[in-house]
Length: 109
Image 1 (tube, rainbow, N blue to C red):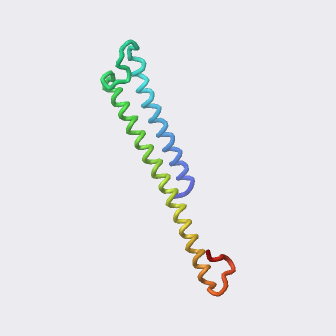
Image 2: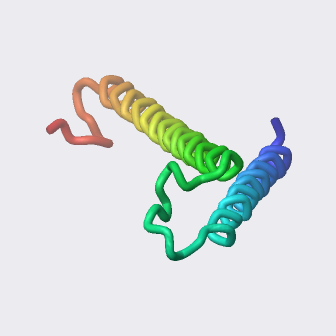
Image 3: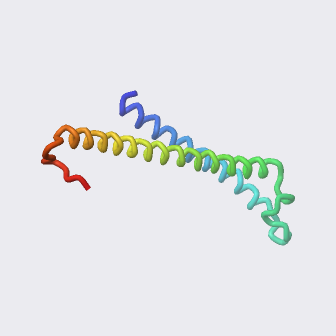
């Protein structure tokens, strides 16, 4: 995949992600508007209507999706850095062993 396509897809994913969060937030604002402030059951599960419950569960699910995706991105970065580091160390070892009598590049620790 070309780099510009990757950037476009990444930007589109961020826009969709923010749009879903905004939609769920607007749906949850309906609960605040319709709730009577004198009732003591504010933010209790029994005080939510069906749409409010669906929005709240959707928000929890979307949070889990985002945390999982962030974890995957961190995993990919760590693996990429680790593989590059392993390849670099292998290259250094091959150079070190190619000069058995005198190593001019690296000192053996």
